Length: 139
Ligand code: SF4
Image (cartoon, rainbow, N blue to C red; front, side, top):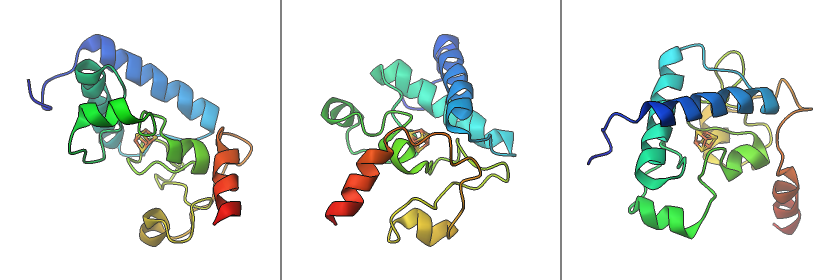
């Protein structure tokens, strides 16, 4: 089986539902180009089928199973999303289709690529913001 395998309908449905709910919870939007969402949901569903976990499909992992066993940090929604509200896959974005970058550390690649993109719904999401804040204090 390769990573190009068509995922099961069950996993596609699970991930579509998850994405819809998490957008509401985090106050984020879908990318205006629907193909962006479709591709990421497909990748997540493939990983659910292959690994049992919604491992982020936009990263390269030398060994996917080792990544799953080692940490939950790249299970969607990943640590970066929960801490900084930043989704580098563009699955959870502003209504204009930009990733939110305003909470990222200055030297993060997201800030370098997209500049400072403000969060249009600061009262929602960032359920692990305390972790980002404690990191900021110790650096
Ligand atoms: S970057 Fe994070 S929030 Fe975005 S699709 Fe990947 S795991 Fe999910």
